[in-house]
Image (cartoon, rainbow, N blue to C red):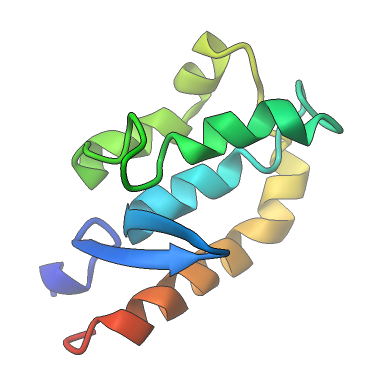
Length: 108
């Protein structure tokens, strides 16, 4: 059952971006819904890109990368999650990442 986890390293592609795991992709998606940078997608994009393959967080274990999408990490970056917007989009963000994994992982 552990293999089916979002923490399993299986490279996926979503919106033309490559992520080392479903968890990396999911945490990056949170940075599309920021209060502090709301309306300024140019500033938010580099924060999302950190989670990609080759990005500074791309080599982290998925369990460790999870904390980089949390309140503490966002606060250190001077941003805040728009919880209402995220709650509306989080299920579709996860579904998209899971579909991407299904497309490349025969065991999934």
